[in-house]
Image (cartoon, rainbow, N blue to C red; front, side):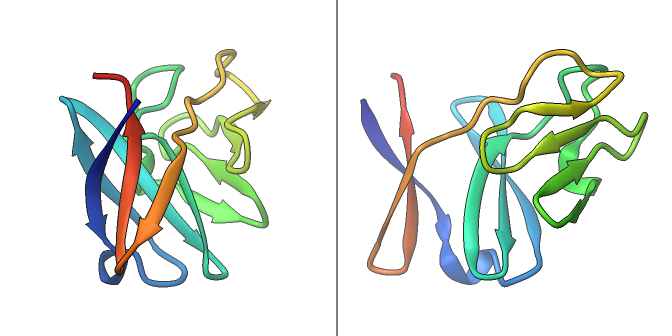
Length: 103
């Protein structure tokens, strides 16, 4: 595993969802009550940009068809999506978020 600098913590203030590119893939970082979650950035149903979704409690809702995913583990909790989201492990160091990547 390789650690790759994804973003500054300033780029993901509390209550935000932001999108970043990692090796040609979209990754979203969600800051929910000062706790960070890193997930794949496109819905597994139809490829919607999840950065445009909403988070309530620990559930991310897709903006296109309403699929729901648990942000803690990427699990589908409401369709039409059937495949879970990928969750990325990360480390915080000196004000930056570094994500684990298989290069």
